[in-house]
Length: 209
Image (cartoon, rainbow, N blue to C red):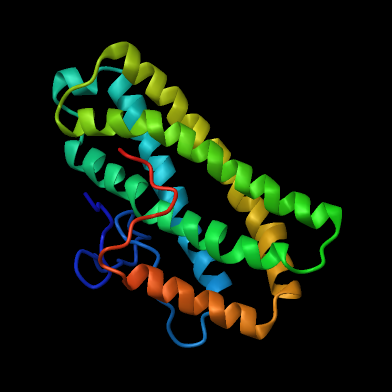
């Protein structure tokens, strides 16, 4: 089943209190370029991983058994990690990184790309364990030992992605801005628009949650 929230259908209006975790990366508007769009979505990821850590910490302390866990939040997080974050991953892995690998780079610059890509791989490994836990919590279930392990994995995911996003914001995206041509960036933006507008598409690196 395609669990991806669709733009213009399930998207919730963003409030001034901060970004919503149930939004996919949105199509560009005005003069915002593809790199700015990728950076903007990092705020969504940071909020989601912080919420995931708090939810699983509460679950590991007995909130599921007491019936005080926010099952709706568990479902929203499950949908986010099965959809929008993987589309963001694909925008980088399928769109941005191949374009960077085609231009002349130093060994250090190539190392930045590969470090980010390894972070994406590790993210998917963690999500393969965390996804079923979120499904169970959303249904009001979940065993104590599994929840304790899940809380540790959620903290690991938060730390991992915080490091990956800092690397991208401080090194990778500035590298792309320097080395990619206007045509490269326009093509990347068009690909992102097409990818996010396809009702039947699934992320290439899809994780079954």
